[in-house]
Length: 136
Image (cartoon, rainbow, N blue to C red; front, top):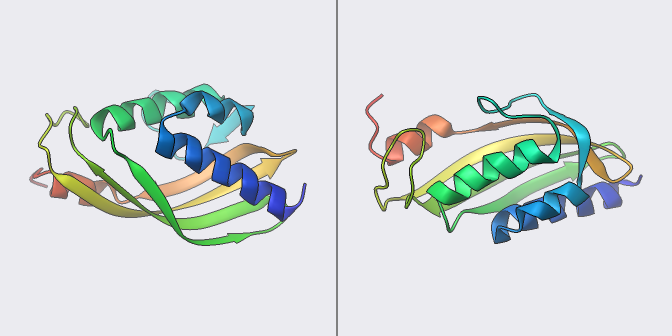
């Protein structure tokens, strides 16, 4: 596939997360897709992402991920992003605070035939926890 097709698949992934239509992740994530930075108990494939983002959107119902910089080739899409939201549900054992969060992250996604097959990523979880008042 071309880098343009990979970028389009990555955009569809982001749109699904931002609008909460998480079932659409099945269209752009391969069944055996491996997340090299999974959350505790995250399963492989689209269901792992559906479960993860369901929890995140429950904690932050207005969750938005905005791509700030993106580079791509015929197999990979890499991007820096900013995530924002309002803490209105349980997050990592922290009861809702109503506080707004903003954090940065980076991700590399590998694609084959228009579907994500691997992912590496890092978000500023410590920064989010501090914004929610967690003493570290």
